[in-house]
Image (cartoon, rainbow, N blue to C red; front, side, top):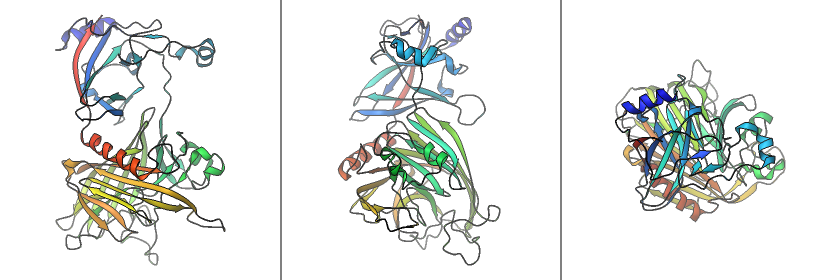
Amino acid sequence: MRLLILMLFMTASLYVGASDQYPWYTQGDFAPEFRMEFTISNLLDFDRQHCPVIIKRSDFPLPDIHEMWVTVVDPEGPPFEGPTDELLRLQGGHQLRKETNGHAVFHQMDDLDKDGIWDELFFQVDIPAKASKTIFVYLGENIRGWNKHFTHANIGSYCRHQMPFWESENVGWKIWFANCCDVFAKRKPVLMSNHLYMDNLDGYGVSLINEDWGSDIQGVAGSLGGGGICLFEFPDKPDAVSLPRFTPAKFEGAPESLWNAGQISDTRYAYQVVVNGPVRSIIKIKGMNWDSGSGFYEYEQLYTVYAKQSYCTSRVTFTTFLPIKSGVRMACGFRKKPQEDHFIQEKGLIISSGPEAIRDPENIDDREDYRVDFIGSALVVKDIYLPEYQFVPSYGGNHTFKVTPRQNNSYEYLLASAWSEGTVYNNKNDFTDYIRKTQLEFNHPLQVHFTGLHEK
């Protein structure tokens, strides 16, 4: 394998031999002889924490590398001093060992198209304002390093209903009504959706089992809930919106039903776990056979959640887009907070927050609603999609953006939520500051440049 790597290095255009600027990383008896150097740049004028970094395999100078041959290292990170005897006995031979000259970074190599070949190397970094930092990818067999999961995604049978869940330790999302998000928030940083779907627990009652797990904080019913896609199909009715689960195919006598009709006659949905941690998780949703009465549509949607963050991102691609008339606009939005006392709409950003009473929507007994001082929701659309704000009074009242897709009928947006009982962004001012900062980061991802291959 060493000879193969050396041959690949010698054919690479940026093979630069040894480098002494940063001493070489070691971990126990792992002393690699090859490394790739990447420079990561923050163009914004504020420090960024837990910021996503993506290196695509197509941009990787050595694409045919097994995942157990990759170790991502921050050369300025504090080295791990080594495990205690007790920790080593507990964790066994795969336990991280004593490091020198940097610290291994939690990362993952994700196969997004499920062809058995990784597509993206993903990790997160902290980086100062207007600064650059060096990251090394060391090559050599290294089977050590347990990766704690900070995100989770899965599909569960939840109350006899197939549903996707995705969460960070701060906040999570799930889909009950087909394509519109529910939101659940935590009191302490914890992953807990596995308990929801494995034990089939009421999201409004889980605090009775473990107070740290928090509660559902989003009503959906006939609205866009915590976030969803829609279409504006009627230019002469600028605030009239179409949703995939409200179509002419509904069964007779149930015009107010919150569900689609049959899965053959009406819009249908399929869910897939694309990635499940440790530092990002991805759920894929396919919406098929959507006949709105004014057009026929199908789409694919990827929801991605990130470690240490209170947002998820979504990429929507309409694989079939056949409107009957011209002027149809793609869009996304979320439900206006019922007691909204704080509203911001700036360019591609919407924030809606206020106090709110949360409860099981069935209201089966005489328990009083649980009142929360602050629940906030936010939507950010990237500037390149030319977001145009539109309030929709129907379907429960929703804040939305009409968008202009760039190519392949695709666009991206970001959803975020928080509440007053969480450990972060638990008031309208902190939440607003976080969303404004996140909006800038979403529009200006870190710049990643491959700068050289080194042989020890």
